[in-house]
Length: 230
Image (cartoon, rainbow, N blue to C red):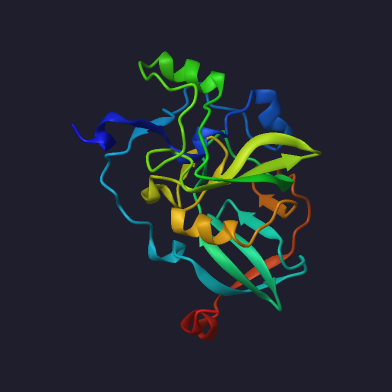
């Protein structure tokens, strides 16, 4: 049997984005559904590719946020890395499923390449009840649901348990599939990882509007810079 058929993995952000209900509410999350969907998926699912609009692009973004800021639009499934001069790099992302969305202003507290996955105890218990036994720790690698890179989101100096990370399930980009983390295609998270440093401001626009007033307008692809690879 293929290695991929034998490994159960979390649906990307579901991997580390599980918080107790009171913690999720603190970040603007909606009330959790009584019967949540499963957090695990067989890697061997047919690898459909994300829609064309979720491919990495340089776009014209009008915003008053400083260069280096990350803006995540969970409604439209886009992450923007602000470049300045009304330009940004736009990436497609996957976000939290119903009841697991959130909003707020956080920072990248630490970064890790090929991170290990430590599913929260709540997730392990929930999946065990369904007959899915998750590991206490899964080391980093191609089968790891956190993908190639992870950027850990902190607020007030504390880990929120939410991350921006890669995924071994690229077909989930553009969908509401996770437990609150922000997932990206591996090649995209590697690209962002090299540019976003520890301390980077991250604005998550989503349920509850805990991010406050944020001014940004996506005016579409910057064709010249896209063609020139800028």
